[in-house]
Length: 315
Image 1 (cartoon, helix red, strand yellow):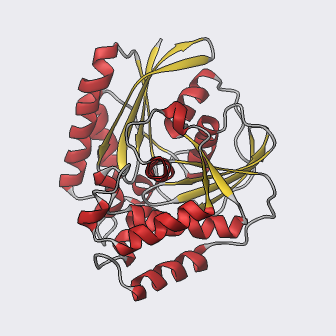
Image 2: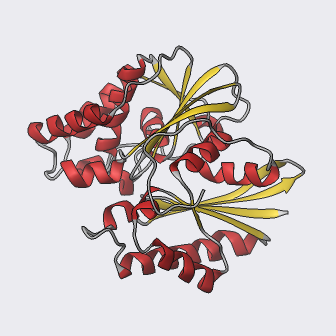
């Protein structure tokens, strides 16, 4: 069977097309379009009409470019933090179903973390922690031998942190200080951890590509790549020192991510210090792979604990 999994994220809409055989699957195609839902939410807590239309059109484009050419038979779709927060998210869900037939679930932070763990931590062994940082939230999950045990969800994402704190280009020292202070104040006391630290999501893979110095790298090369503190500090200094036009020219960095990479890197450096980790290991798996894994292996159990989930969600 051919399945497509969609991630309606706070920064981008992502699609993964795969071929399944039993409980295994192989990836046939991947697509991504920037939607920036996380920064589109108005002060009244709603998504403007133009953002809803853009998201619907982006979905139709991914369907035409990736799903229909591969003869997809089943669609899975999940929405995350921006849609958990948007008061009119149900409008998007209804119109998406009417126009495409795709049934979108707006998942809780708990479910998002569980699905991301499924997709990112396949075949991992030992004591594990996963940092999955998106456009509007960051989920930190703990477990062992591919089993999730605890989840902490934080309202810290590259899109909302950029929007709220980094007004100048490049940011001022005062803005950077406020950003770091807000992140530190938002972090709970993390459990003692002495295992392997894994990172998933577009931000961590972007940092890996910059470290490698190329955009032309496949998932096999990125999977398991280790980013150490020295490299992340080097990138943080680089992003903080350059205006947007020059960040867009950095070798290995996707130009459309250049405006939010600074806030992401500042956040990741702080989290690395909190974990006292020498390095973080990249996983190219995530929510979309987790949706497919859960469909193929429905007996997967949920995590035991959660902190700070959003509202307006379906578990």
